[in-house]
Length: 68
Image 1 (cartoon, rainbow, N blue to C red):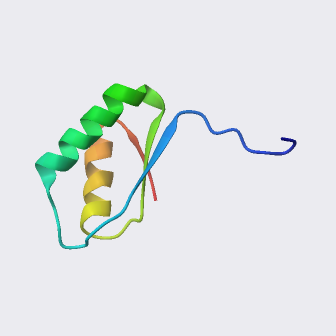
Image 2: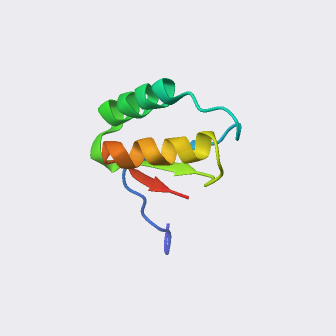
């Protein structure tokens, strides 16, 4: 497709409750995603409090690129 952007890697969109903070579960999910998709993984989040922010923080700690 002419003029289309090329996206490399895998982008995973996360969104959820602003009051729910299951740290162990999010750590496990990010770890499994990183193992499956490798260094091209990007965690796309809504930049809100709760799940969105938790995925952002865990992704940063794991060396996975977060994207609001």
